Amino acid sequence: MTTFPALEAVSADSGFRRTTIERRPVGAHDVEIEIDYAGICHSDIHTVRDEWGGARYPVTPGHEIVGRVRAVGEQVTGFTAGDTVGVGCFVDSCGRCEQCTQGLEQFCAEGVVATYNTALPDGSATRGGYSAGIVVDERFVLRVPEALDPAKAAPLLCAGITTYAPLKRWGAGPGSKVAVLGMGGLGHVAVKIAAAMGAEVTVLSQSLSKQEDGLAFGATDYFATKDPETFERNRGRFDLIINTVSADLPIEDYLSLLRVNGVLCSVGLPTEPYSVRPGALIAPQRVLTGSMVGGIPEHREMLEFCAEHGVEAEIELIGADEVDAAYDRVVASDVRYRFVVDVARTLA
Image 1 (cartoon, rainbow, N blue to C red):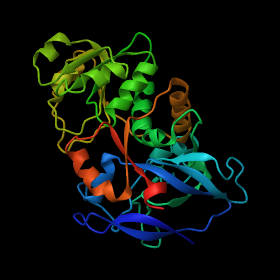
Image 2 (cartoon, rainbow, N blue to C red):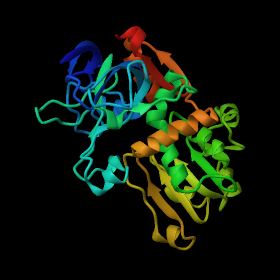
Image 3 (tube, rainbow, N blue to C red):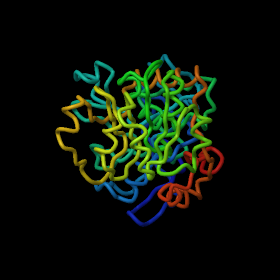
């Protein structure tokens, strides 16, 4: 076993404390990573504060991980010490089922092993990236292209793949009109990726406070959703809407913005069910759907795409002792646009 400094929460309201955690020995197919940066995802907050239920304390969250290879197992051929690599939302799967063999490990029939908070056979749970090191099967280690800033690449391992996957799946590209609903940690990356794909991009946000940023990230239009005129002006306009927010919304109002055969894809997780009359879907033949992160092959593709097109997250780099305050700021929408913990300098 190797011991690493880490942060952990021991209850829903405890906040974080410094600790040390043990990682398994490096097996034949394992990669040991010294973590440099760990992004803060809103999912981390939901889990640590047990807002979704099922938190397995003590919790060490973090699934937007970038660092450097420290050691590799004897049968690892794809990585060597010193390589810059990343780890995303999951670290293992059965590797045998239909989904795994198709590169859709996130839908593993036997249950994907999340980077943190997944129960292990010994009764413990997986621990994530708010730690100085991690040991991961090489199948789930991602090479980070040299063209990407490692700190700004970390959020791509969740925010990037979460938005890239549905944009690609639903045909964002030249000639398509894409709206991004919400421009926070997920949304600002979605705007950048959709614009890089060649789509005409519109931001739909509560207010115009981030309009200058949205246009700089590649949007051509920006509308405030609190203005009723927004829905009149954009009725029947979009081929695809990526909904990145977790607020409870009048979803039919947003469906009205779609063209015939248009798609509204949600990647946020609101607490209440959507209320949709079938006619809002049937008459214009619209699609209401959702999307998870992509599989490992799509992660690799996304990172190469972002490197080629200069897509990186906009971040605020913080120290390990600032994480509790950062959580409160995320909840208050007081970050532009993603917090990243400087693990190597402030925790290791």
